[in-house]
Amino acid sequence: IPVQGLTEPAWRCLHFLVLYFQLQESQQSSADFRFYIENHTRNPDDLSRKQVRIYQLYSRTTGRHVQILGKKINANGDDGGKYALLVVETETFGSHIRIKGKESEHYICMNEKGKIVGRPDGRKQECVFVEEFLENNYTALVSAKYKGWYLGFNRKGRPKKGSRTTQRQQEVHFMKRQPKGVVDPLEEFRFTTVTKRTRRARRLKPNSKRN
Image (cartoon, rainbow, N blue to C red; front, top):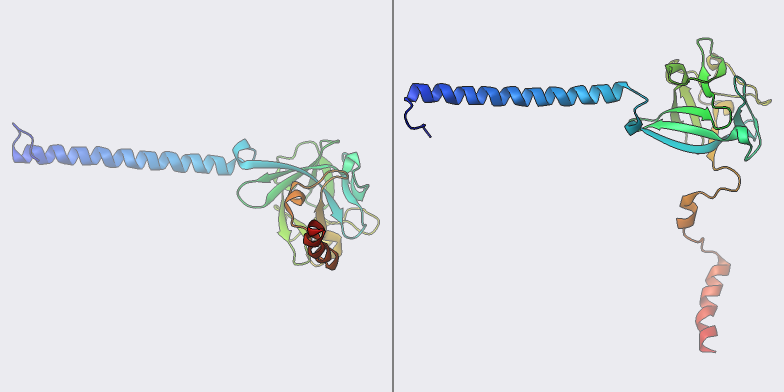
């Protein structure tokens, strides 16, 4: 609609300027959004992207649990042992995790030689692992920095070099477990298993009420 007092050329020029400023504002807001996403994605320690859980890692090889004693790490921890309690920091985007000992406050890291070591600062990429969920209900943890190198322990519970591991080896298979004496919240919502005994009890219940 032409503005009163303006000629048609002047009105068209004004309309063009309004459209131009609207386009600039749209591009600026889009750029600001991209900047926000890039910064939050680039910073792995951002609290809005981190979930913290506490559990144990049961080793398929030793039949015991991964424990972080400080700089030294092994898979000989007792169920419910204080050094076997792990604080697992999971990033919201993807399955990248950092594993810290609740008692020792050291992180599980893998250096350039594939050696498993404990470090007090877990912000480096060497301390990040990627969860791989296996068909046998076990979990494997591969280094995010050194591709194909897994966290693993031999039968004596000693760490294996990452360069000598593969996903198929039992030494790199782990199972997440709640600490001893702690009930998984999901257990409370599981249905009761129907057996011959429960079926018989259900059939007898109405009869007992009649009597």
